[in-house]
Length: 220
Image 1 (cartoon, rainbow, N blue to C red):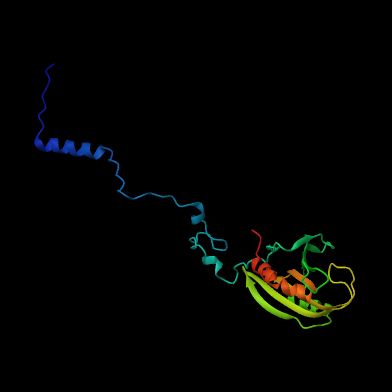
Image 2 (image 1 turned 30 degrees about the horizontal axis):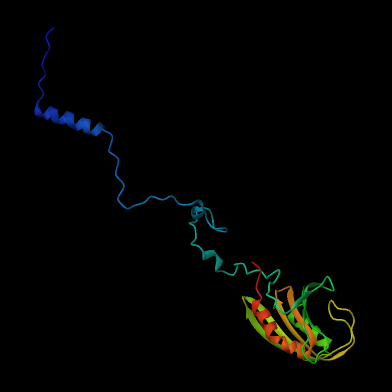
């Protein structure tokens, strides 16, 4: 058989080239220089609680500015730094969390004592109870904010009435006594730092007591 040579016109060649180019897979598009592709996290795409399904996620902090935002919790305990000159002593009662003896100053016959405890009842009611232990003497109070804690500092001078104070056995009445106290208000619970002793001894320890108050903080 004789082979027939097929001659293609220029127009036919152009048509074949066009069909071939259309059937060729497209070349990958190169990434733009300096552009990084990221994937959104699940937390960013998840609506905040209380939003209807399909609602766009709210910016961080946007849901915490209303009245429903949770208030900070009151401290369950309070940490402190005790002065080195104070001596740790056994607790005379399970109601005590800690007890310290403060060395007596000249003119006093006994060491003072600092009792640390925790109870409920409110700040004012407990200060009133302290006043009653001094025969209803009027307390001098000062409200401070210490490391985010609400602290009421109390000072009472006078004669301690006969009878026992919290966590202590019954005692006879004593003249020239002084109380320095700090009450940390935890809402439904208060934390007490109460120093009682001869007026000279407690007055001499006032500087160290103020350092103790300044060190009060929520445990980490």
